[in-house]
Image 1: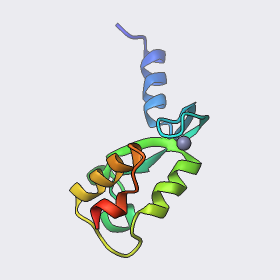
Image 2 (image 1 turned 180 degrees about the horizontal axis):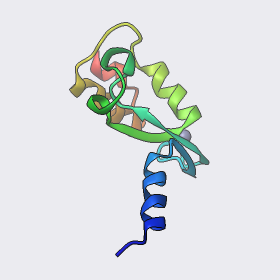
Image 3 (image 1 turned 90 degrees about the vertical axis):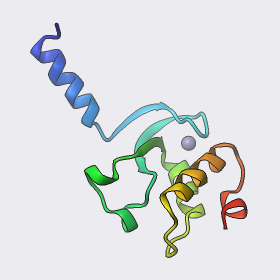
Image 4 (image 1 turned 180 degrees about the vertical axis):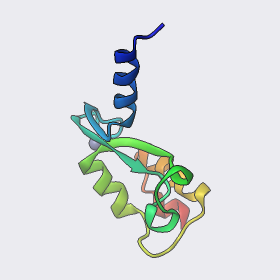
Length: 96
Ligand SMILES: [Zn+2]
């Protein structure tokens, strides 16, 4: 059984918005923040749009730059975009 303190600590960790770890994209030790797979500008924030990956600030800017600003893609396309980007391919060439 977990003590109340441990439970609380786990709860806090779960809620933590950022922490330092190795970025899964660039492999640098960085502060990682949650990045929405489905852009909040189209899908909003909150429970209904909770799929996120934790990557560093630089990588967030990179993927953001590769994501169409005004064109809304399908959810499947956003997932595909992230997958291609992780593989080191330029997502828009294959997607659009
Ligand atoms: Zn990174």
